[in-house]
Image (tube, rainbow, N blue to C red):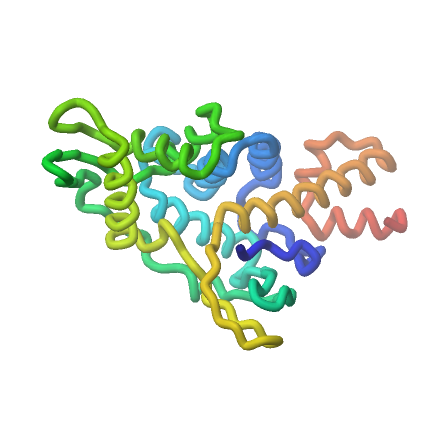
Length: 260
């Protein structure tokens, strides 16, 4: 698994767009105890404030992730500082991955209705949405294994069956159909990076999770911001709102004046 390398996040990695810092802090606060899927929807609302949350919840996963990649690029730049462990030799890899190597044009699905014919059964299904992944964290599945969680998600995507029931065999076929259809029509729904270990020359594929990357950057920024608020509030007596409203250069200058 590729993860964010917090050690390589620049200390000056301050959002470069006009999203108010207060809104980013509110999103961070809501997401601190949220599931990964719920965080994805929270971040999507920041990326696309012009779209109603109910509509965002219906977005395909790839469309969500395309928007989140765009948000990452706008906030923190066009490279992802990441690290991974080689599965053969255990060596640590650190890399900067250009966002452009991952991003593809957001899919626009002509339909989100598909049909599976399996063992004499006909099943209508759709692809998972941003809302499905958010609801996955609210479904009391925190301690469930991967199969149980994927079964739950597949049932969420089940629209109709010809006999009203889904056997275990049909459910497994449905999970395979969802994965195959998603790979064909929603290329950003599951992204893998090709990695090359310089120590042992192993080349392998590793999953990439844009929500995890974006959240890690936002979390690091928010914690630095809160520390900055604490320092300035303790020294000058200003409120959090007053400090957040200051531009990054002015906050930095005030900290320099007090030697922090």
